[in-house]
Structure formats: C-alpha cells, structure tokens
Image 1 (cartoon, rainbow, N blue to C red):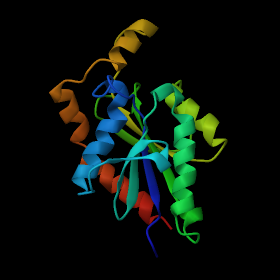
Image 2 (image 1 turned 120 degrees about the horizontal axis):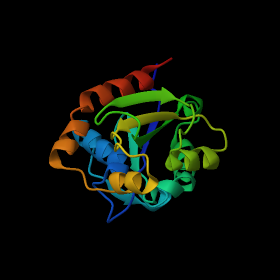
Image 3 (image 1 turned 60 degrees about the horizontal axis):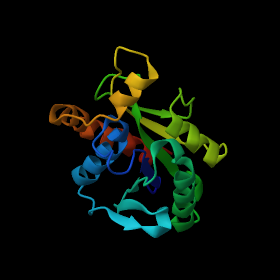
Image 4 (image 1 turned 120 degrees about the vertical axis):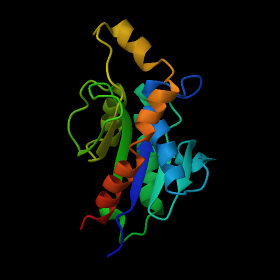
Length: 187
C-alpha cells in the first residue's frame, strides 16, 4: 500500500519574530526537512505565499502569517495540497499542524489527533478556518514562565531562544520523523 500523503504545516510568526518560542513549529520543521534531506525551502504563491520543501513522503510548509491569524492560510494550503494529491489518495491524506505548546516542558513532542485548542490562538484560527476538518497536532513543548500574567507570557513566547533551547527542541528530530512515519504508514 502507498504511504499516506502528509502535509506538515508549521505555525509561527514572520520576521522579526523568527527564532522565538512562538515560532518553535517553524524551527522544528526546518530542522526536520534538513534531517530528512529534503530540498531547501522555496516560497510558493500557490501555497498561501508560505515556504515549502517537498520530499518523497510529505510536503512541509511554513505558514507565512502571524500565529493568531494562521487559519485561512492553513486552509488554503490544505485545499491546494488535496488538489495536487492523486484522487485515489485524497481520502487518506492527513494534515499535521506543528505548533508551540506552552503547557509542555521544553523540547517535549506530542502528536495527537484532534482535541481542543487549549487557548492556543493559532490552533483556534485553524479550527475555525478548516470548518471541522480533522487534523493532527504536533505540539512542541516550550515550557511556561512561572507567572500566568498575560504580559509576562507574551514576553516569554516572543523572546529569542538561546542556542541551548534550540538544541533541546531539535534534539527530538528522530522521534518526530518516526512518529510522522507511523502516521504515513497507517492503514
């Protein structure tokens, strides 16, 4: 049986917020594309002006919009992905949204099907724009500051990651590739 087509879509923020905790999804998929020897990312007008790296097993796409309004671009790209997928494989195709996860320890990785947005505005935007289309979520743990104050949390997620923090997140690439491989091979 053919492998299941995967669109791996990362959420984050555009410049100057690259390299922040809120863009951990972009960091992870960029490192994943390199780990899997995918070609360099290129801008694609057809994919909501995001950047793509197409491999044999999946299309990796980095959303170009701000996190909290990413849903329309994700929905546009998902529909384009389905349009480009062989008609016999469309029902088997899966969308995996890669996002930062404030409630999980730094570097933890969790793949789950559906569920609530848990206050994550990027996921809320995706859920609203996809209109009930189910999708997988790959949460990238970024930890949480001790304070629950919204200003403190905002400053935390928008701060640049240290090289050590980046290393902690990217050290999980083999596990991420394995989890996505299992999803692609599901019957």
